Image 1 (cartoon, rainbow, N blue to C red):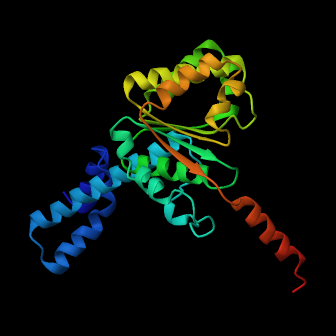
Image 2: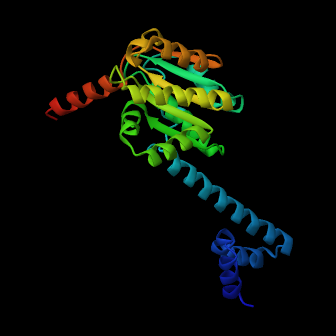
Length: 254
């Protein structure tokens, strides 16, 4: 059996990581006169690396995230009073292992979504199943979906290791069905000790008004806040900063 036959066999066995690097590893072994076990070990590691890479790509695709954000991309100097230590603590993902929640609340444009998405992306890299939801829009669409589609969506949101509800109450008030869904998600995930991260511009004291039901808000917050890190974001808006910079550049005749 020649090298091409071995490569074809590896592909039939779905060992594509080994097949891709076989020629290189053979030449490397011949040039360095490596022992067979060293070459085999390298090939097996190639296969493991490829499978891990494909799994990470699949988790990211299924998560609903559209950006691969990092805390390293974040400009901490712009708003020095942000809870930097608490953000990095979330990024450690210890809260997911413990089944705890996180609530990021504060002014628009202060970085809540960036931090939450960076945490969610890190979770996909570490092997967690993540579900990212643009809260108001998706909850509203859920209310209009057919029963089978509702059941599928709910199952996925409950099953994920981490559920990220981004910009909750952005539109101030959500519909009755969306409010009931939010209560169901919080309740079921609380029983299963599965983590939720929520970002919102609205303080929790006003949630009853946005839900249209003070009792429902109390029920949701009781479960959500039982094991929860509360991060408050204050300061200037990054988006306004970037918009101002663009205006300056546009008005510069040079």
